[in-house]
Amino acid sequence: MNLFDVYPLFNIEIVKGKGCHVWDTEGNEYLDLYGGHAVISVGHSHPAFVSAITEQVNKLAFYSNSVINSLQQKLADKLGKACGYDDYALFLINTGAEANENALKLASFHNGKRRVIAFRKSFHGRTSAAVRVTDNPAIIAPVNEGLPVTYLPLNDPYAVEAELKKGDVSSVIIEGIQGVAGIHAPSDAFLQSLRRLCTQYEVCLILDEIQSGYGRSGKFFAHQYAGIRPDIITIAKGIANGFPMGGVLISPMFKAVYGMLGTTFGGNHLACAAAIAILDIMERERLIDNVNRVGDYLMKELRRLPGIKELRGRGLMIGIEFEQPIKEIRTRLLFEQRVFTGVAGANTIRLLPPLCLSMKETEEFLNRFRNVICP
Ligand SMILES: Cc1ncc(COP(=O)(O)O)c(C=O)c1O
Image (cartoon, rainbow, N blue to C red; front, top):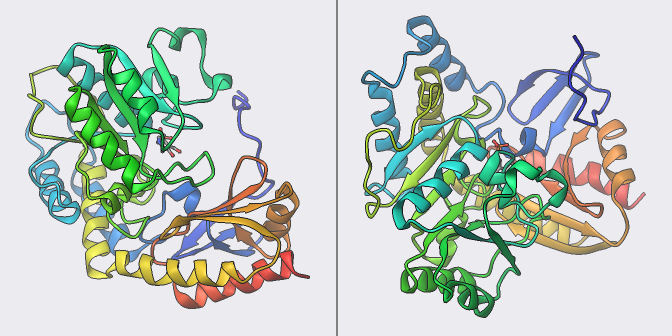
């Protein structure tokens, strides 16, 4: 059987990781400024993460959501405290798309409305509703088209109000910082307007923090820069350092009803053990402080480099936009300098390193980056 060929692959197989480094089958070492797409939060193979999942799998990997799993409540307690939403409720699933799928459903169950407001260039995942609110017609299949969605420009509160006034909107969904679009943050003032408008028109505000959350922006959630509280927050990626997991944080205004949401694998014992370990490590190693220190330094040094059209982002979520396509820069970074980076569109390099990136590793990255862009 062949694999369904949907991924354009680099001819590299990664077989080992430690901290912010990974190794391929030939023994080549790479600096990881990509974090496997913003997934690696505390670093590859962190010993406390490894022992937490090893201990758990030796006891029990999985049992169903029909019996008590106290690890879920332990995770909810720790997460509520870490992110400042301890009055919200947690629903656990396995991926980011599932988190958004459930968030959109929950909003619609709550207010009985259908239409969703999303933003231009948004990315929210690939399942039915999540892909429909993603602004990329190439990945929306005819079966996804039933959900009515209006895509609006970022940072235009008047356009949002004109739509909300029509009375048929269930929810507004927005990324804390747009990732796939190339690291575009909504302004604090825009998020504050969204909060006000959603309250005024009784529309649910959903913050997708799947890429920008879990400390990556320098605060636990990127929207916390704006000082707002959304009705629903979605999380995934960094939550379990590569173990598949997603979550929906739900404000007290939503009433849970037996059976309204559900999942087989979501919140399983192994995933919870992994996620609990991640929050413990983040706290013990003060990783959010590290994100601010290292992120500020990285931004400052990148600003000195020639040929960059625009630098965007917060913390360790950085977009470096060039005038020209970056394909060659990224390829040379990977194969000559042995640095993994991400991309967004044709002209932007995306940096999404593990949150434990050290100053020394940052210097190392900057040296290798300079070798490519200022030879
Ligand atoms: C902002 C955002 N939302 C949702 C998703 C979808 O997450 P997943 O691939 O885990 O379904 C992603 C993935 O890149 C994302 O960046």
